Image (cartoon, rainbow, N blue to C red; front, side):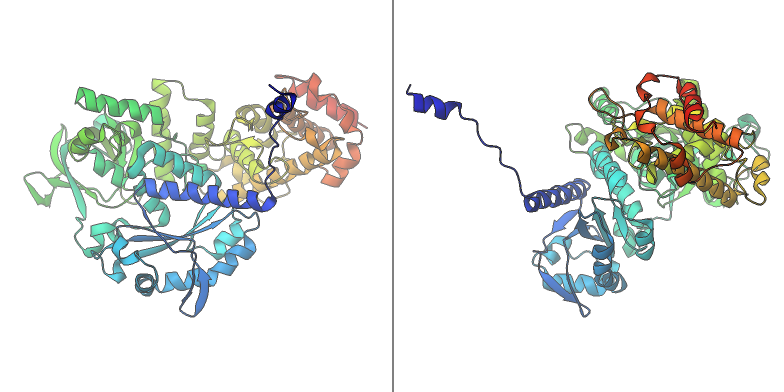
Length: 582
């Protein structure tokens, strides 16, 4: 081989560095493909819009994509920009016109987009279609802009990850959850929209004696066989990190894909159902009828033994609270695997044994949530000791005024705004590169935010009527509680910001690992919290960010690496001694 050929062979290939424009296009493409892949996986068909400019009701603009399933139309808008203000408000006029003139928009699309009419078919009239705006942003949209556009549905971050994970696990059956997210009512979806729906689903079962259950008066217990399809359609699971807005009241885990796959394999190969009970709650509107004549209500007087009953549950979304057994239900999902042909036959059969707890009339949403959370914890704590993080989530519901519940909500607040934004692990979809918070809640924040003591933020909270929190229960002082949580988040962030700005090297403000210069960990964060407790206890006041900074001169030289594991108390006391003791 000649020397010139050898040089050619050994010459390294030059790495091509993409331009900012290429990186932008790739980000847009990846974001769009991710959302579209999810929508297609749950049965929505994409209708090409060809990136053409349109004029609808006097307003010009472009539509990124349109999707349709049955009578539900989704107008999708994609953005990867960090600033959502200009982009969103620019689109608002056109989107509002579309929502205000839905049947006109359907007719407009039939005339404008090739293939639109053939894609949606002719089963529904133009007025029976439900048009939705889906704003798919790579970055989180501010609450202010969401409020200004409250008819749109926003998908980003955790919410997008949730739907992708759900679609990957239960495929087509994730569609029901997405329809609820869009705000579609059961009676307006599919064939129900043309008046063919059945207002109730009926199950034959047994009414159990009230005195045998030991539940409060008015709660009724029934046992019946149900079909998986009906439970999936009418059921709800209060999963953390989902699309529901009241995330602080949610606690159940995300469906586990491997577990679902193994259970589907069992259903296919063994050809039999799971024998243990599924536990659910049923709405107060549930009707108990005479099984021999469903025009008559069951006589519930003097029920001292199990009694046959026809159970009629309203045919609407979110009617059945699934407390225990979500995997046993959702393994019957509509899928594309080799087990689907066998499972599809059983999905509609009433072969799942269900114990249902019917709520009494007039029960409030907060009471229902607390009852379900308590029941969930009882079941899971008896089967296998529930994880600390799960107990903290449920504490928010059961005992919202406890120090643990307050601490959990504060750590969620710290993860949303301030120096620790995007650095804390507070949800299922938060990666392992983030800082775990269970010990911060239990050992750091709880003593700092308790409702007594001379080292608590409660002591320096100048709020009239604050002592009402000490004996509060249920939702009677929720506004006052929210105010206290905001007070705590604000003052903790003041200290954290001062610490961050006082470091010599900005790269220190990241999670501590073997490969970086970071100094943040549960130990250091708990140490900062101990420092704040010492300031409150000994100074009887709490400084502003500026005053903290004036105290923390030279902090960049502090040897944080010396404090490991559970030495946060020593860390906090040493920080106070060096910077605040005079």
